Length: 144
Image 1 (tube, rainbow, N blue to C red):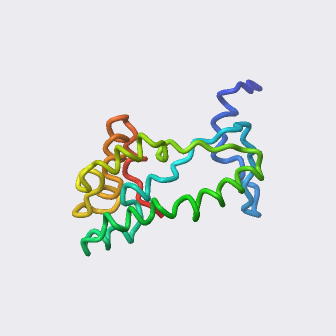
Image 2 (cartoon, one colour):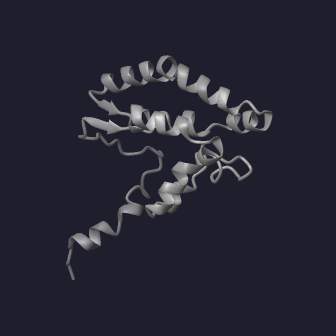
Image 3 (cartoon, rainbow, N blue to C red):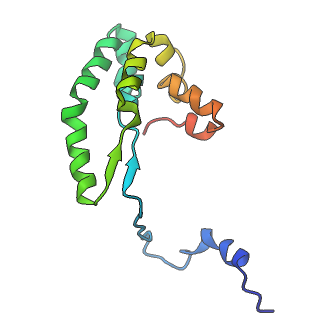
């Protein structure tokens, strides 16, 4: 029986490279010209390990403010050059002025809660929104 339908072919996607012993991945070129990036989320919502230490030292607000203040110099210029080199543009929803103002006005305990484990307490508000949207796996990922 020679029934090669789309369903049969789609089921083989996990095994497509089984015969390829050189462990190379197939390259994919995205056609999208505009990318939505999460830049600023870690810096504003306690997403880095050093933020947990700063929270225990009582210096979390200062650490977050420092991260936001230097984000423009440390990350955005570099990332813009990389994206431009690949013909892409970026949008940064976490750096929208209204989002930045909203997060800065929140009490720290609503933004992040370091009494909870990593993947739960860091970026707490973002994780709660993700869970409400049904993005449970994404909402529990620990920063690598």
